[in-house]
Image (cartoon, rainbow, N blue to C red):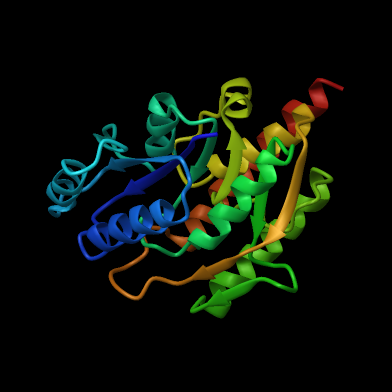
Length: 235
C-alpha cells in the first residue's frame, strides 16, 4: 500500500525545509511506499522552500491552497490529489511523530479501516503543551467521546490514518481545524473499523501556532452539535 502524507503549511518558513527533509528521509529509510503532498497557504516564503525541495523528488507534490486559506480546506485539497491507499494528515510544524506514522500504516495493513492516535492515553507522550490548551482539549474530547459513544479519547486531533475509501465515502467538508473531528466522527458513525493507539506529540519550538484556542473550541462545539443533531434526525 502507498501512504499519502498530507501536510498543510501556513507561514512555516522556520519548519518547512526541516519537516520535509526529516519526513522524506525517515520514510525512505523505513522502506515505506509513500508520497508527500504539501499544501501551502503561506505568504512568508514557505512556498519557495517547498517548491525547491519538491524539484528533487518525484514523490513530493506541492500545491497552493485556496483563498481564503483554511486548515481544513488545505487537507481537502490534499485528499483530492492523493494517490495513496492510506491517507494521513500530518502537521507542518513537525509536532507529530513519524514513528506513529509507521504504526498507523502497519495497523491498516493488518485490517483496520482507520487508526486514531490519542494524546490522552496512559502510554501517550506530550511535550510542551500549555495547561490551559491541554485542559480545554481534554474536556472537549471527553464530551465528544460521550456524545458519539466513540472508543477514542482524542477525536479533535487531525493526526489519524484512513483508507482512502473512507474519506471518499464520508466526504468531509469543514474549512477549519474541525475537519479532522468531522471526518473521524462521520466515519465512526458510518461503521468503519478502527482502533485507537497512544501517540507522541511535541509543541512547536519556533514560530507561533495558527490555532486560536477559544475560537477553535467554539467552532468544534458548534460543529459537534450540528453533527449530533443530524445524526438524531436519521434515527
